[in-house]
Length: 253
Image (cartoon, rainbow, N blue to C red; front, side, top):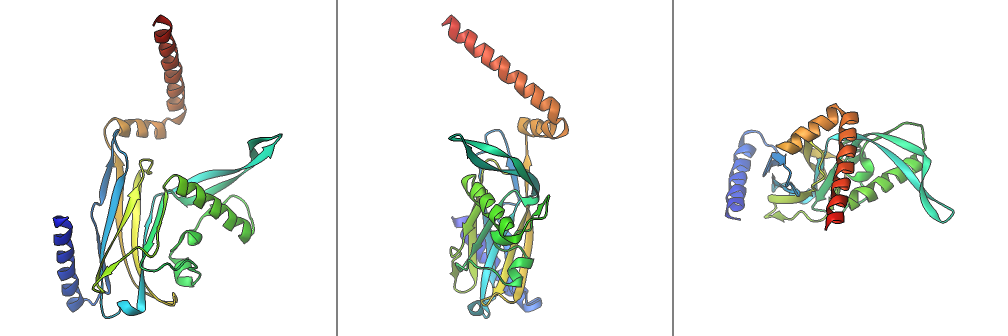
């Protein structure tokens, strides 16, 4: 806690110096830019610090987003057939989907329909994804809502709207939880200073968080990516051998 206070004080003075020289309206920093995933990894906390020019805070809102590496995915709908839920044959190929998305703000603004939010992908409804076929806007929005529900269940989507408290109209911080299933790669962190009407982007601050794997888990991850068929085969053989060994042990007890 003491470290956090010292860091905030340092950030405050840094911000004052920067105002004198460059007149930046928004500054930020990240508690940990490098996160290592090991065999015992259970998740991580991302803490983002920031400072805003107090002379303009009253007229603007702050939005913070964390966007994970882009991935491709397939989405199938569940339908009920003869009383049993099954997956439809038809599926949607989704491209450019963020593997993780988090947003925080000092306001609970949910609409985010202005061009500022759309162009900068602020808010889940404004993330840019590509589909393998031409579908209407309504169906595309439905797909986004389904994905949002899935991401919420897996803790891959975090919404902290109206949870950023600004101290003395200057300093603020936001915390996000990164789950154990986090994708390896670069996570883009953006802070936006937006007019309260949402029509003007006043300032933006950006940085990255690198998530990497270490140890045996890193070797297994690399092998699974470079040799997916062999990895799947070895995994299946390992599961069969483990099951056989377990049955032998119980048989002899």
